[in-house]
Length: 462
Image (cartoon, rainbow, N blue to C red):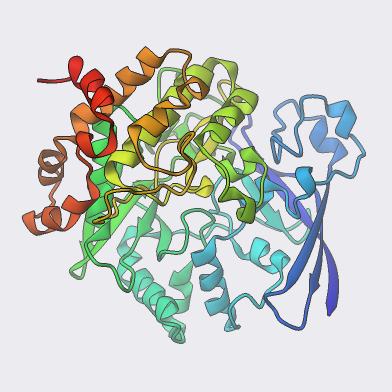
């Protein structure tokens, strides 16, 4: 067994009078014990905020659960540890590469899978990792931007295909691997900038795809937008006849130096323009706010996320975010999106509020099936993961005090989802793709009891 301890500098991006910049926030100490089998690892984390950082009025919390800054005196000069006996701080874990990002890093290093230390993965995630944190070797280490541009996407895709196939990446393609993303799971993807400098996440086809996932996901997100859910801009393009979905990185915004957009403007809708600079939004996953491990997350539910909203979201956003979370639950039931795990729910910190709020929706792909009874990943209600509207309503009080309001939300979602074919066709889906996806979309009568069907139809569209 090998025992290693390493100290890393954690940086936070803070807005400034001229333009924002990364500043050292504190020191992270990682102790890792690796057994003879590389898969057998134990990790322990410790963090201490920098004294100078705590004096900054604009200082943000590195982790809202384990490293909160509500009372700076209590954390000043203290060694802090993750809550609930976790081996990592959730806020820092969210800045680490995801499964795909780790494969990219391993391909660049030409090493076996899962053979690097957690410190290595954290350091290699790059400057365009999600959120407003960066992890570097020392407080004096420079910034490390990593996103390619849209024109290089053909080369990025070639490099990603080699990684997915487990093949050596040709030397001339290695620069296009960029850094590993830190959100989005195991599918091939890369961060890219458009002609104006806006940051997007490009999502590529994967081996074994049974249908055009890029088109299906982009259309599903447009359907969600019609249901009143908060969705970032999405695009569908083809690179050499291969489908690619682009989704705007909602952890970035654009504003005049030293200023913030009006409160009425959604930050994820701001665009690059002359005299504007790019800002970063702190980001944490639902896994972080629920404060559990990946292993424990399988036993968590939407009500746990709703509880986290009441604990950590800015008071002005609690009601609207709780109701949106319920609407997303209902939407996932209708479209059979069972990839709704805690990492596929997130929160961003709005500098205008000085607090957290539910992030825009992402990673929603319908899964066709034939089973009458279906399950989501997270618990839905009193009947566990069972994907029915009755089960969702069984815990409506976690999201809204009024059952009538919960029914209104269900009605609103259903009125749009039942016309899903029209929305998909309007956004470029072929008849063949629509036929492939029919098995994913549930009829109201299949997911609601006769009594509940009557309640929903009572004031729904005729």
